Amino acid sequence: IHHTLGSMAFSRLLSALFLLCLWPALVLAKDFYATLGLARGATDAQIKKAYRKLAVQYHPDKNKGDEAATAKFAEISSAYEVLSDEKKRKIYDRHGEEGLKQHEAQEGRGGGGDPSDIFSAFFGGGNPFGFGGMGGQEEEEQEKRGETVRTEIQLNLQELYLGTSLRITRDKNVIKPAKGTRKCKCRAKMRTKQIGPGMFQQFQVQECEECPNVKLVRESEFLTVDVDPGMKEGQELSFFEHGEPLIDGDHGDLKLVVREVSVPEIKFRRDGNDLHYDLTITLTEALVGFGKAITHLDGRKVKLNVGGVTRPGDVQRIANEGMPVYNSAGRRGNMFVHYSVSFPDKSLGADDAKKVRDLFSKTSFRL
Image (cartoon, rainbow, N blue to C red):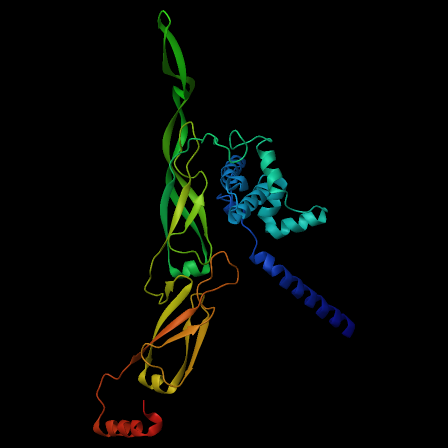
């Protein structure tokens, strides 16, 4: 029996050690959809378009010497490599990045291909930057896109502290089939016409194809918005190709701008990654010290134990009790408690006033 109990305790210890080792990886796990600016239900076509746009934007040959762009390019490549593979994407959706790594380890394959190889394979070995190699003089022709839509999402300080998931409804234009045909894929061509002996005139004409007709219809769209802890006023959440549609072009993007709104029940104020809290104490507490607790944004009690005299305007700093630092696991700002002192409303009687004067006349109480 003792042997069995010892074995169970040892197994639990091993499990705890395993979870401790796994925890940093879980905290730092990447959101591949967010990396590409996509919702989790993105189609294969949307994944390809997002990768094409971002890979060209952050390619090292277009951002020479920019280490941040090189790191971003590698993240984009890793995200595309997983989400463009049906099997990998299913594993990632169900078990996350760590589950994907464990699956690849079991199959004896290391995760993560070379970003340059992924880029070359996507573009078929061609050069998306035009003639003359990367960074050449001629850039690729930009695809026409619909308007980018910007709208606000209102969040209170507690939601920004904890992080939250919102389901929003948005009315948007959608392209639908319509009766008849229309001119499409129009392009300009130069023509030359002889207007006399040895005289020629060049002029431009527009050539178009015939396409099925379409129309724009208003429809409601439901989106799930994941707000990470520590996000700030003015930050944007991007949804690739959820903006305005463009006939014969790509959809624009949707950008949700974070706006912090105040609510009466939240007493904290934010300044960057720090939190500020105003606390009023009694005159007695200011003179002899006190022990109090304030309720944090996550419901925890933060204890304040102060001995001695607290003056009006004193500020107490509490380390690592501020806002989570966005995209930086485990880091937090500080909390600052600002003290004010509440004085009695009524004047002291003669006897009490004399006792106070006598008390403060002693050397140990002189200010």
